[in-house]
Image 1 (cartoon, helix red, strand yellow):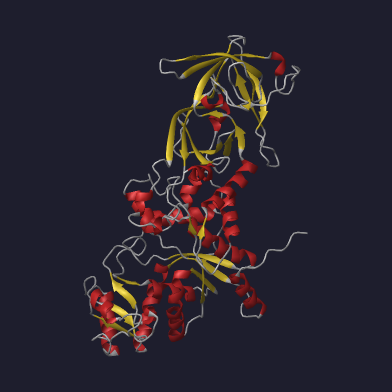
Image 2 (cartoon, one colour):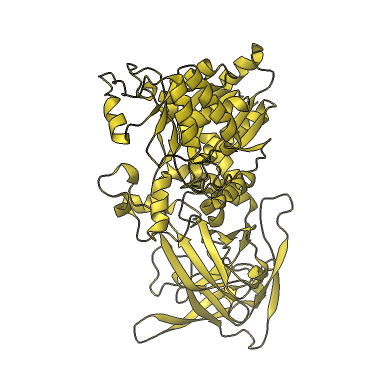
Length: 555
């Protein structure tokens, strides 16, 4: 009997709240800012928030934290929704912080009326100077003791567009002596004359994150507001607003964000990679974005498995990307259709095979799925493409592939024996000549010959030309974000190798982007979204084994 998986610390908190009757049901939320594409770190938060709702019979809201009109766009909103759905989750309600702009304004007015907020004319530099340091208390702004009536009037004038950007801000009157810098009269509203993707030009003042986030949680009656560890210091202010405004007591809990080797997770840095042309787009298959992973061929099941394996911790750590690659190999090994593709072709001519003859071999796709993936027909003829690496002029010890005088089985077909080969002026092998054993047909072999090697192939007459993109890790450094200098200095120049003239078996003419393939002996691949009927393009998701680890050991 398998051991029951232990609860993570957030699940323990949830179960305690349910068991003590504090909550009849739970409500979580996933609150991305629509200023970029989601990445694998967000996937961890998605799996956690939606997973809690599913496990404990609660619900999860999708709420867009759209309080900064300058950086946000509906393109990002649409991509986020697509990513969440693709990962396998559905939200109970779709909300936007901008839905609450009127309510948040009213709450800000309430704070002013309680003498707990004031309009400050100080510049950003002056406010920063007055805040003090972690070891020295802050100093009062000269505008901190304005009357309630004056603050109400000024705040309304801010809303009505009377002032320029940066001319005034609304601050909470909290605690200038607190050791927590976030409590030293934090900003609640700033003036920003910018068009908002949903509210248009209705507003020219926008709430700051700390004010919008917690109050939005409260408006929605969120029971468990789950954030990453960098928001620990914000929790005191989160609770202060709830207490002073006397609103629904949402509670914030923090967990360790996902940091992964050989990549960066900062949206700012990912945006740099896109804008400066180091990658083609947000969904470039080398990017750690969910859309990039999807395009590369990762499955939602593999990402959910990865998030489950790394668990929910209270301390930040660096997760090895090899674990993510392991998870996708585990999944693709079960579902990928096995097919043949030749990536570095050299011609094999079977000299004793009839010139105009073609045979059709029926072969299984050999998936581990319940239906085993079905079968396909593979044409065989006199001239075949094989991998250049499957022939060695002077064979090494324990070489079981083709070499002069050596025999090998062509997968799903016949045993062949190499008789000769030709070279060009540069010494490159141009053709390999072999004879086949007619009695050695796969599934009906009466030849009595045993060979140790089997290689894949594609019929020259029938094979389809394809572009194949071989992806490796984007960075050479294990933790590029923490290295000295510009993180872009550590970009792997060999992160993409494009093979413009590969050959694949004709069954792949009907390949689609939803199906995963194993190119036998070469790795796992998927059809790229840029592929057309006239130009097949395949992306390598991952190799069959962890080839990267071998390269690291060599160096």
